[in-house]
Length: 107
Image (cartoon, rainbow, N blue to C red; front, side, top):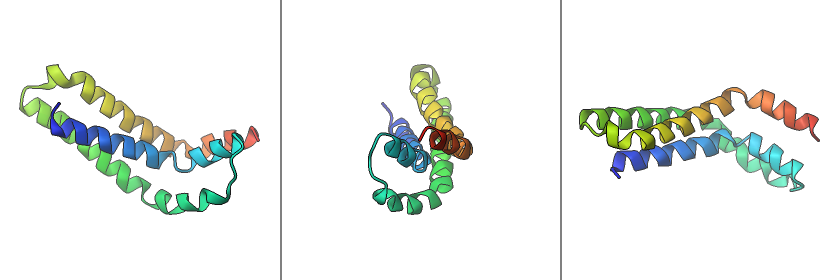
């Protein structure tokens, strides 16, 4: 696999991790874990839009490089997977408030 696809996946999963930084603690509290460790996620949440923007740029760069080298037909499923993970991270960030409100009602 080409390096740009690996960087695209790495950045996509990093963006997904950053996007869930506010939803994941609520889920963990619902599962019975304590909440004192939640302070860590405040610093991560401040950088979430930057990480998501970089992940989006890496995904777009991977598509462009694959298209330029004529490798889209061979790498289309890898590229689609990376793009889907990045899109899921954006959806989680945009609907974070609604997801947290839903999780609070489950407590």
